[in-house]
Length: 279
Image (cartoon, rainbow, N blue to C red):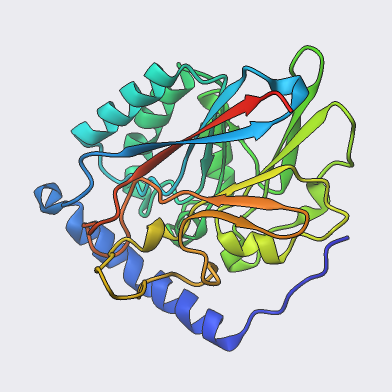
């Protein structure tokens, strides 16, 4: 069993501030969509991972949608995903910010689900939104989307298995890693988690081959010559890209949306593609 971590008072304070600020800010800026800046285009990053039983398979990872209003850029994201021909699509939380975003969010998710099986988990803003987890689950089921909240599914790949594990948001200390399955020779275990601090929770006995997360927005605002000055609680200094321990690899995706202010600076939105290759 994974050890529980206590929540520090600075984390409590920052989470409370985030909760108080998120709803009024997102609600206000959603009324002026033309104010968005730096979000209209996205990068596609390719991640390769060796595994004999998944050679030739491909998945797309998206995160931090913050989708309260549907924009033309969301159509471009769908088309980019379609052109990548994924076998699976994974989304690691921060789906929306306010309840009014639900129809817009599921309009987007339904299009993705038409491309490939879709698996997702929740982030801190999904909890801040006030939308109950039960409502997310009901809507996901209705749209044939798999929502994983401290749960796993195991998908057969013919001669092997892909275990998809989704934990609740680690930045709010809701992740429970007891859902990670034991190691199996023909199994690749993928962990979906919203925040990069999940790497501080996993232990040597957790048989996880790859961890995908978001939450950081890559810093969202990058000023040349100045270290990243905006990171939400739960990043623990992990801004973007690869991070590793002796036993585990984690990729931090910059995400597709914005937090608090509707612009990105020198930090383009990102779609990540995982391609499995021969060992």
